[in-house]
Length: 160
Image 1 (cartoon, helix red, strand yellow):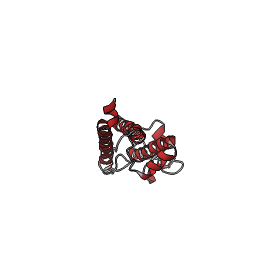
Image 2 (cartoon, helix red, strand yellow; image 1 turned 45 degrees about the vertical axis):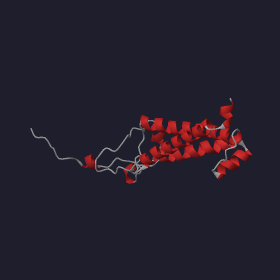
Image 3 (tube, one colour; image 1 turned 135 degrees about the vertical axis):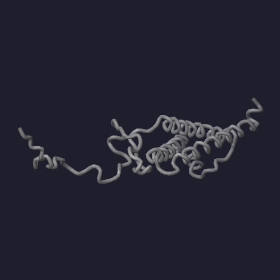
Image 4 (cartoon, helix red, strand yellow; image 1 turned 180 degrees about the vertical axis):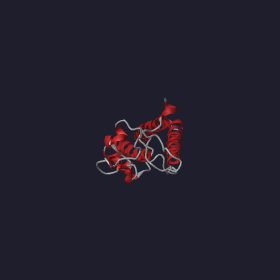
């Protein structure tokens, strides 16, 4: 009894339909970024370390939430310092928005920070992006310390 172990022509027939998804790099935003993505990092050591992933770490989520919280806190302290303590706003765009409309001040401040953080979050595996996020956190902490210093040295609190 003999078996024919030669592969048939139908064995090598390419049954793939459509364009090969591996021709280009992974896009920054894809359907997998929102719905059930699986990619947390690179599978092979030969893959570039600078690429996009589908799932982000909980530490990155907490860092971004902390930066957004400090952004909102900075907005409230800025409002108090400008209107109650007559401290000038140094950012010309924010000074203009404070004079025109307080709600637009908060919206522009929050959305500019949020969009910048979204841009950095999508590129978190690129070179120096984590360092940039930590620097932003450090700058917001310094701004918060300066607000607290202004509040502690104000004559308004001493009168209370």
